[in-house]
Amino acid sequence: MTKIRSFSGALAAGVLGSLLWVGSAAAQLITIELQQNGGPIQTFTNGGAGEASTPQGGTTVGNFRVGVSAAGQNTGPNAGTLGSTVLDVTTTGAATPLFVRVTQQGNITPGAFPAIQFTSGLTFNPLVGTQTTTLSTLYDTTNALCCATGTTLFSMTSSVGGFFSDVDVVGNPGGAYSVSNLYVINAPAASSAQYTIGLTAVAVPGPVAGAALPALLGMAGFWFFRRRRSA
Image (tube, rainbow, N blue to C red):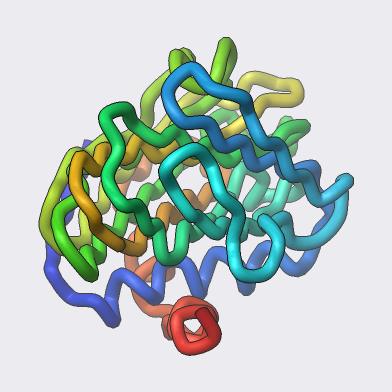
């Protein structure tokens, strides 16, 4: 397992930009779920093609206002790639956390490859006040939104700005699997922040951790910065 920590905003933006650039090549079923504590779950899906997102301007979830957008790829050697961004998470203060899960289902990695290398990139960008947030990437996620289980590829909790990365290799399951980006946001007082999770997958002949990282970090952050300007 390889971990890289950096506080470069441009580098972090490149993660999502590269993932969503790849994601335009194939159809995929992506579902966005939002819930504050045990309240009602709001669900948005791309219907099996293109980018999934909440309505323009975001949506209200309990004490939070949040906008989410995601794209990925579920076939070929990059099956399991999923990039998502949560923009302008604002709240007047909440005693209970906000859960956001972005899931891509039906990923199939070619059987000729015995392993899949996942590279996770997590970006924290506080704007106003303080939010303590846990960002995670998961493989084969199951169960309820607040209590998702599966294989956690990478998880990090922070209340300050930063970018964190991790590389993991798992065996090719030989059939369809899911991947998820999970956000758990605690904001007891009025605050605003932005977050991104990028998960890139590369089919490999065996464990070669770290090989995908240069490509992940080398792409420009065009998509992320464009969305920030339009938010």
